[in-house]
Structures are given as structure tokens and as C-alpha cells.
Amino acid sequence: MKPHVHFFGGQGIGWALDEDLARARDALGDRICEGSFAGSTIIHSAWWPPLLHAGARALAGKTVICFADNPPAFYLTRPGFEAAAARVDLWIARSHEAVRQFQELGLNVHLAPYTVDPDVFRPIPDPMRQHVRTALGIGPEEFVVGNFHRDSLERDVSLPKAQKGPDQFLEVVTEARNQIPNLKVLLAGPRRHWLRRELTRRNIPFAFSGQILAGDDFSVNVLPRGELNGLYAALDTVVISSRWEGGPYSALEGLLAGRPVISTSVGMAADLLNGWLYRSPSEGADLLASIARTPPDFSVLREKALASHSPQALASALASAYEKYPHGQEPPFRAAMAFAFLNLARLHPSFRAPLGSHQQVAEVMAEVRAKRPGGRRVVAEAITIAEAEER
Figure (cartoon, rainbow, N blue to C red):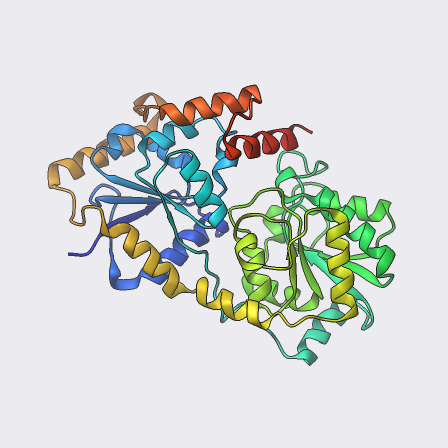
């Protein structure tokens, strides 16, 4: 009997959370029966906040599996995680860092890789690459670095997004330019306002692929995946500067696009980029200078990423996660109750039965709020995240 699974909690905008669910569906294929929320025994959520909105009655009797879109240290700074932790039966971590943090919290966890489409993210011929660079106003001798993250806050695009570390990116490229005079930055995607402004202030040359708007440009500057691959091709190095990550997808996309990638030691990047991680702006600048002097061969890392983060690897990991839980459809009465309670919860918050609270997670979250590191590494990591967001 196949597992009956309902994929839940996407945003409906085609961005990362929706892509996580789409990749899971595509990878699993006919290994599962995909069903309705009410009729499925397994609810697989893209992230945990939608579970709070569904409520305990709608989820009663079901197995709840949840992707970790961010590391648990970040979740410890978010109200409601203690409730989600009480109800999620299994967390799907996307990196060894996240696995370790879940284990420190005493939560059930299973590792399943991120994937991207290797038919979309792939190296392109050099003449095509040069055409892309020329169209962006990039000269043949320029050494181009960048990433396509959102570096500005949604609520105020004049402020930096602490998670993505645009301030750290700025320091890396500022120091690197002392060693690489022909360095240029390429930015693309929505909410790049903060970095565009700060690069201008420091007289660091950059190109931006997109429409420049004073306000939020999310609706016009989200990039199709195929176009994104062409922009990766224009880079000499992808520079990831994040303070915390569930992924980032850019580590995998950049590698599959055939580009060198350097990163802070976060999430999936730490698993993929052995030898190309940096801990400070000066270390990042030195890595860039080394790449500029002698372009390295990233083909071995690319092949490893293709194998470890393939759709087949994802399907195998998820299938083994589902295996330990009930597989059949919900009995008609329980399905009817789930349908009714889910729709009532959507009508008004008063119909949402609370999920309870995971005692250990609640205690750890209190330590984070009080900024008492204690003996758990994950607590210190959460406090660092909270302090970064306060700055």
C-alpha cells in the first residue's frame, strides 16, 4: 500500500516554498498517492506556520511531516514554534547543520536534500556566456561576482535583510577590490535596494538586471529560472554571505550552472562547498583573489552535488521517511471531520484549536529570549540570529 500524502502550506507564488513541494511531488512520482487534506493520513507541510492556522482538530489522527525551510535556531526566535514542535511528527532537514540543531532540541528529524533541475541550471557555451555579459554591460576583462538573493526587507526596502548578510557581502567585495581592481558586482532579483545604494556610496561598480523601482519591486523582478541560469553564467564567482539558511538554493544553482561558489558556513552550502567557505570578509576576499588569479576547477564539487542532491536522492529520502507511518486513506468519518474543521479554521481564528506546546522547546525559547546561552550550541546560534535582526 502506498502512502497517501497531502502536500500543504505552499504560498502560491512560485517561490522557494512552492518549489520545495513541487520538487517533492516530481521526485516521488508514483511512489505515493497524492490526496486531499481530509482524506490523506500524511500531511507534508512546506513550513510550520500553516499548521498553526489549520488547528489541532483538523490535524487529529494524521501524521504531520514538515520541511525545515530555515535552521531550527531561527525558529527558536519565532513565536509559535513551540506549538508546531508539539504537533510535527517528523521534521525534514535540508542540511547536516539543521539535523544537528533538531537533535539538540530532542525533535525527530530526517535528512532530505534540496534539488534543482539540472536541465535548467547547467553550464552554457562560452560564446553564449560572453553574449550575456555584453548585454549586461560587462567588459571582457571584468571579474564579476554577485548573488541573486533578496538583500532588503519587505517592510522597508531601505533596510538590509539580516539573514542574507548584504552588509557582509559589501565588506567582502570592498576588501576584494583592493586585490582585484577590475572587480564588478552583478545583482538581480527583487529587493536589491540596500546593496545598490551601498555599492554606489562606496564607488564599487555594479550591474543590475531588472527594473529599478523606488518601492517594493517583488512583482516585477522575480526571475524565471532559465533567465537566472544565464545570469549565473555571467558571474566569475557566486558569493553567498548569509548569516543563516535552510539552503540556500543559490549554492546548488551556482554549482550546477558551472560557476565557482564561495559562502559563509551555513545550511546546505556548508555541505556542498568543502574548501570554499569563509568566516570573515578578509577570508572571503582572499578566496575571491585566489579565484581571480587562477580560475579553479569546480567540476568535482558539481558532480558530487549532482549525485547527493538529485531528484532520486530526494525521492529515496522522503520515501524512507514516509515508510514508518500509516499509509492508507483516512476512514470516511475522520476525513469528514478533518474537512469540516479545516474549513472552519479558515473562516475564523476562533475555530482553530491550539496545537499545544512542546515543553523542552518552550524552555529553550525562553532561554533565547533571555539571552542565556546555557549548554546548548543551538541556543547560542539562536541568540546570534536574534541579535542580528535587532541591529
